[in-house]
Length: 124
Image (tube, rainbow, N blue to C red; front, side, top):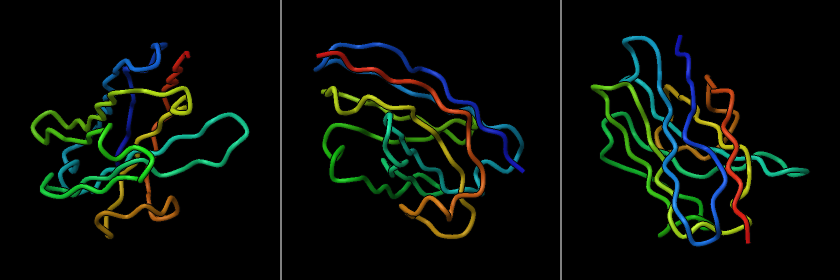
């Protein structure tokens, strides 16, 4: 089992940057593909980015491609989401999630473990 705790959210102006972190407990972090999802007020949760166990491959939603970068440090049991050129439409609660069997999945239901989320607010 993996427990996930996100941090790094906050309020930022449009065009600014934030880096989210997700710290995982347990020794099996490197066994999981990791993903970031987000949920804006009144909307369904949506896929943002994912990274494979080794960190060698990544996949992004079109809405964030070229602006966001997912990375991981298996020695620190942590996955990151660097968010640049932020837009007001990026405002949401951001969740990290762990998935054990299907690399580079964008499907929410394939992720087994979830963090509690961290709020990102982008002002115009």
